[in-house]
Length: 424
Image (tube, rainbow, N blue to C red):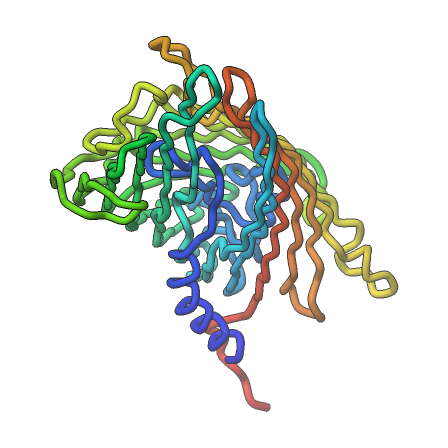
């Protein structure tokens, strides 16, 4: 009962906490911000694999077919501490942010099905950039500040069912909502008034994902796993207002123009493929690949720029876990799950800082991760810790490179529901 009360409490506080997600990546300037993967701390600690592998007491946020394997009611939430260092040709600076990553619940339905639902961040905007234009003597002619906050969240519900032994299918429906605020403040030397171009956009949309998993025992407890996911094409509607003000000392003064924003963001089909091999309750190693065609953004005024574009994206992940002895009595560390993985991702974002049309640089992301699953008491509940070190972007073509360190923590609480109690 205490666990259920705790979970309900977490749901309410997370609605505010996820909505105020902190982010300081300069690359969140583009489009509707930085995209977040739908994954648990356990999955992130294995390089982000989860399309092919599921178990009975951890939620699978990557493949809805994994819900079919749930045998316990599972409450889980995750936190992330991000330490970010950005570097360009002139120097570097660092920042730290803490955020709630997700809050979810899953439960079995009979012996061959399961369901889950939850709340997660989807994209995040959080940047503050300053651009200077100087004359030949080094004197500043113009200052422009780019600033943005906000993002989108997603609520979802998923269902999975075993059709035959080892073969499960699943479906997930989501609703995405949020708001972004962007502004461009410009000031010229020896001119009393500047300009402030602001854009406030409300975003709404829905999506559907289908998945499949197949497990086959090839020898004594040695399992071969396959998985496929497909997130169908979806459209995110954008509505809002764009204002152009004159400004004095950075504060809006007179309205020059006001324009209504009506647009959409089209996200093509995203496909995930996974394969893995493991021994039940002992170890697992998997390889997964995800790919998607280019996003299409229409109707966002500040996003209309020749400085960036979208291309095809893909991600390759390799990872797994090792559990020495799950039922060890004498040694606690034999009951700890050890996880590791790495990933290489082409984000699909193409950025240019030159005046040459089409002179774009791909923004790639590489990360290596480790994690621990610490058992709590005699039940299957556990505390999961994960660390990830990675780099994103490049200083080539006068761009920015990010080096980040993510510390992740999640609490996964397991309980049994719908069990008829017997009184002797």
